[in-house]
Length: 198
Image (cartoon, rainbow, N blue to C red; front, side, top):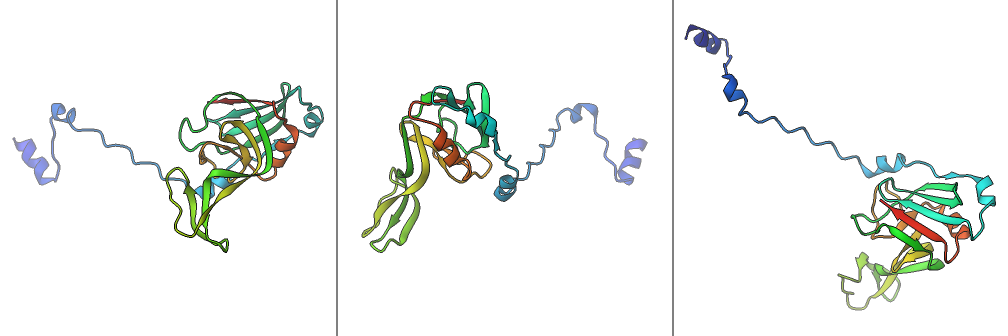
């Protein structure tokens, strides 16, 4: 009893060992979100091997895309001609893993689903819309988002020039950096194999 009184006088509280087992561990503090502009600066640079590019022929060219690593490789046989960062579908499954081939090439493609509603003078009335869920305001029409250097590989999905924020952010297509999109476009053909892996 005397020990307990001394502890209270000193501002201390004694807790029995059995009571300690019932006290929950504090949860760890959540990690701070990294601002998008910092993630952009940490993207790896694309790597190009001119010696391997020279070896590329329609019969030995293929593309490999890693969703978990957010990287793509343009290959000549087993050699890497281009290694580049990408941005794929923002949710799992939007860019489905699988084996595909290039079905279409179009250098100035526009989306048939995502874009803007513009008025008769070409002014944007509503930006960043989806025809799947948005209705056009009166007096406007749809203009699809530009998808330059488009390489279709699965239905509505393809590779094209786009913004790479450092994480998966697209509606399903695979976005490529500005300097790399035309290079890959020029090296692949309709029929080029495309492998998308987790």
